[in-house]
Length: 261
Image 1 (cartoon, helix red, strand yellow):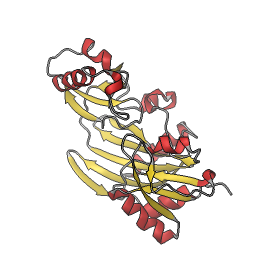
Image 2 (tube, helix red, strand yellow):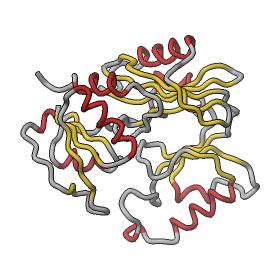
Image 3 (cartoon, rainbow, N blue to C red):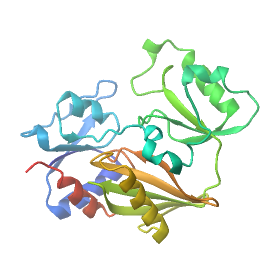
């Protein structure tokens, strides 16, 4: 597999793992708003290329026919197999940014907000209705043609849910329907990175993988514990998700194994 990396702190950690495994990689910058790479990569076999860095790399991968390239995901909210296990599924409001001002009362209530698609225009976060309406007003004040590619747009589909009190959160890396590595990344309000997961949480994550086989050759799953039990928070594109305390050697080896023989 040929590895193409954009220079970030996390990809620097990945490069160390690739060095340990003796796997070739190259460093590139992304031209803003254009998406070209500098330097332009030399790709002998587009069927065996993987890219790590910003989410926008998927456009370059698609344009040049790279496989696996970037593992784009179907929106987890639409996966029927996982519906009963979603923390933020029941009672969610799904609407475009342009529709929000007609749906939300400016009453100061709090909502968890994120794009339905794994598109990174906005990180999942809790905001008040006042903040959400101001955000929408700022975007809607500009005509669509003036909005930069990759930013929130009038038609960006968003999910809003009542916030929950989460006790612990884990990230699980899945390749070929196998859990390759895990990391705790939050305990209550504290950010904590450790390469561990509770036994029942691992079993829960594996059951979710089994419920929805072949969702993607490689992806990241975030799960959590609340007072009501274990839930699926979201899935993320493995090429752009933070590594936390993942075993990057195991992860890189598993992804490299996806290359065609």
